[in-house]
Length: 371
View 1: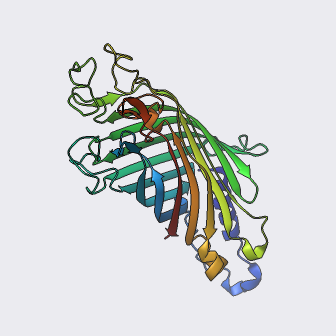
View 2: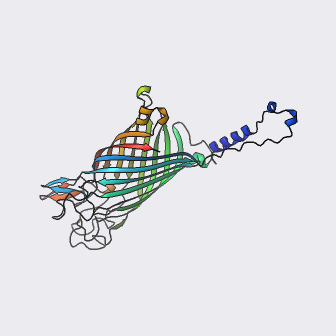
View 3: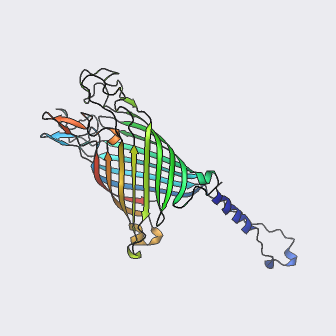
């Protein structure tokens, strides 16, 4: 039980013991008066569930591109359907989110292949569907050790953090990501009830895709199974470092008549995790390096408008919000955007040309409903 919980319970007990004697006559004194039961403190102090719909105008998927009239198109627009859950309990927090991404025709569902990549297949095939889930849990040191020692100045708390994520998509490359994180989180206070969290973590990833699978269109003919291509496409990456950052702050300095806006953002930095093929680096004569690079996955700025508060009043704050953000994702999934021939780069007209699919720079706009 946290210090705060103990204090609340003690306060309730002390208040329950106060029976005003002025309200009882002498004849009534022998009569036993049943005290009201003490309300139980809820297990979850905060529960916040939301659903969202958003649109990414210029999304990308590594290795997903089309070639039409000698021009490479790596842009894939995506519709995103999301559910998120956040809760606070006596010892920390839990966050869970699941997203479904529906791609446009430039990222076709299996068995179709992008237009121009092979002589068969067209860009009119149905777009692929991707599911991505993420979990993060924290365990606060102030709560675990029943202290306030980890709240100093702007530092609000230090926590243990663990997490996991998984992803799968029904396109030709067939990715199947599973990743796990563990480390610390340092939580800082910002003005107007805002926060700024920094989490240094250890990161471990397992994956599967057709980039490195023998017989795939991305693997050169004559590749040697187990040496220059993978028999099943499964890849176990080396453990590496990660740093995740997120922040939120109401724009409380605005006049009350327009005080409906907030800014937030996030950034994740993930270190090199070995060879993207799960094979020895530079394996095989003439095979280009597939070493992974530091990945930057970010949404540095999101502007949110509290529509329900603006139109229905403070009682309905955060029930319906609309927002717009900027996304920047370099070396997507750790793939080197300057290398990875056949994935991040392709030969067109005898020259190496970027597929523009391993870096993402796009706007995203959406609406969120709390329930």
